[in-house]
Image 1 (cartoon, rainbow, N blue to C red):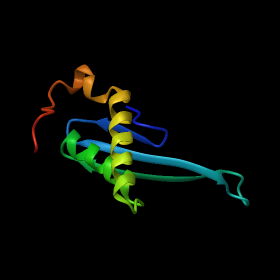
Image 2 (image 1 turned 45 degrees about the vertical axis):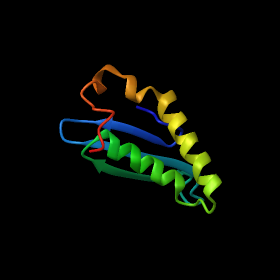
Image 3 (image 1 turned 60 degrees about the vertical axis):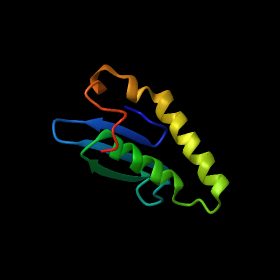
Length: 97
């Protein structure tokens, strides 16, 4: 499931995987794209989405910027349709766990 241009969220029988992937330019020697990639693993979808939101806030310095980025991240999550998918029916969206 694509969250935005850089993040995807996948689940399997064990966990949720939040993946980040970004291509930035090309290696001068090989001509191949320079790829930054990382995966984080979470027990619940809420933990994975909280990590996504946390990543969006890392370089914020002012409260109004933090609030705007939280709103933007929530909008991207909502627009992605992740929480309305039938395979997410098992997820308790009101729980704080």
